[in-house]
Image (cartoon, rainbow, N blue to C red; front, side, top):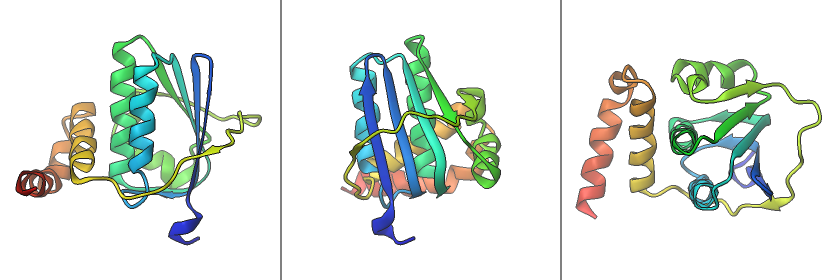
Amino acid sequence: MTQGDIKYLVKIEGDNVFLKVIGKASYLNCRNVGEFFANVVEKNCKHLFIDFAQCTGMDSTFMGMIAGIALRLRKKQAFVTLQNLKDRNLQLIENLGINKLTRLEDCNNCTDPESILDVSSASGQSMLEAHENLVETDSSNLAKFEDVISFLKKEVEQK
């Protein structure tokens, strides 16, 4: 699967929001996912479902965005459900403690969103915030991402 094959499908249906990840989610393609998540918070949505059935992998920036939306929705008594996490993707979520902020479920008949988000690289500021979200999620993540956070802070300050 090439970079062009990544797709983020979205749908807002009342208080429920759906995101389906197809391909590998990474800092190279998740800028608009972050903007979509900000819109979810702004619209006071109550439940965000993220379907990983066709997700072939994800990096720390994308997972940090998930942690961030889960933290923000939790403050509003809303929540995130991660659907169809398997194998390596499930391990990644558990290793970073994101599973403690979200609900996990298998779903055979998940909602199929139809709108496609454009893909573009995340900004340095977005990547920094994503990694800071991971540390807020679980303080033990600081040891894993301390160097990345330091690098990104310097990069953001220089711009």
